Structure formats: C-alpha cells, structure tokens
Length: 79
Image (cartoon, rainbow, N blue to C red):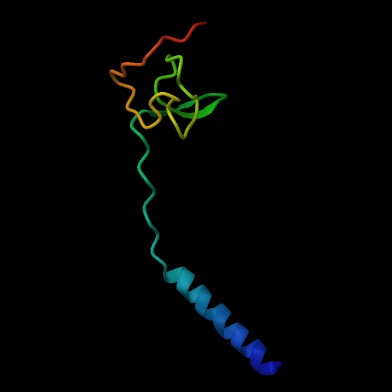
C-alpha cells in the first residue's frame, strides 16, 4: 500500500511539472467578419441576409464557410 501511494505521488508530481512546462498554443484567428452584437453575442457573416444563421460558428445554410462578400445567394431579410 505504501509503495502504491508513493508511485501515485510521483505520477502526480510528474504531471504537474509537465503541465507547467507545456507550451501554450495560439488560438485560431477570428474570422474577419466576426463581430459582437449587444444582447445576442458573437456573430459571423452578413446579418442583413435572409439566410444568415445568426451564429458564431456558421454564416448561413447556403454558404456556411463564406465569405459573404458578393455571395450570389444573398437575399435581403424581410422586416
């Protein structure tokens, strides 16, 4: 029992040391058309388009990866 406890402490110490020396990877850059809308959150794409998903992850159902500029499927949103 004493040996198992000692081995567990060694593994814990090694994992703590490994996590403190781990390199922090840079985040993926934000899409150029991502912005924050008060009360809604982060959105990407052109929200004036009828097909916009109003999401931070996809732009729309027709062209989810974008870009929205000069999209041939653009239709203005009806009020």
